[in-house]
Image 1 (cartoon, helix red, strand yellow):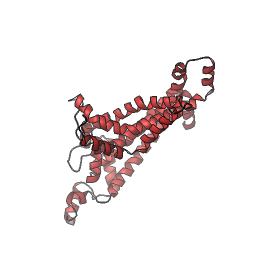
Image 2 (cartoon, one colour):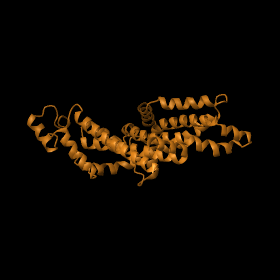
Image 3 (cartoon, one colour):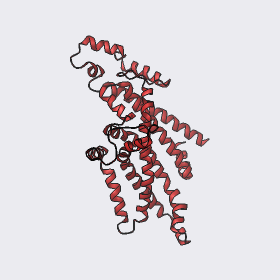
Image 4 (cartoon, one colour):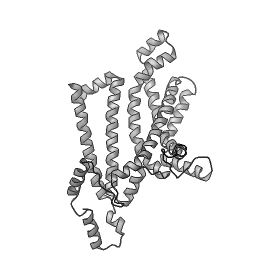
Length: 323
């Protein structure tokens, strides 16, 4: 019963969060300097032309009325149509989702394949000369370098010199997997640097916290091998904070994909939303932000569930506090 009430509370919190996000993004998009009429008609349009355009798209109604109409349609699965192209927003998102999803997936895979071993290696060598310092230096550099700086440098180098990888083009995975890899590898590397660094640092801290626990000392005293201690004690007990960070990083990667897609000219959802902001295409902006919020909330709930499975003590205490 306590578990059911806890999940009900989490679901209610998720719904309230999405409702607040919807209100904020709808209001903020309408309050951006330079409205849709200014962008489409230009600064010299007559008041009559502006009024006609506003009436065509319902922008002459109050913000509350516009929001009520948009929210009602969104609840029924209709996120509207682009005010520029006239195409349904959901149809555009379906076309562009594979690009953003592939980019994010590659970033997460890189974080797991490189960040976890680096963090574990750094923690296990923390008391040895040079081992911990190298790991901290790598993770520190990865966190400190902004994506747009690293991405701009990569674009310049690989555009200036023929190094075998493609910049500024995109090939669908289903049509040409090899060409897709050539176009997606560099953006994925740029996007994953931060994820690898944060994952490595979190793994290092989690492992160091576990290493001082009494059961580790007892395992060493029993003569257990280092490999057995890592498999049986370190990995499982250090996993909860790492899982939470990985789910948070996934949401971050979706946001970071906006910059990377724009730099590498990838036709993903992120670059589409950025273009929509410049054009004041309200329907696209609202749908993009709402979609990001849904993904973030869903990932947080998934992280809570995974943490409870990995460490029932944490799941039980969380349910006890929130139930």
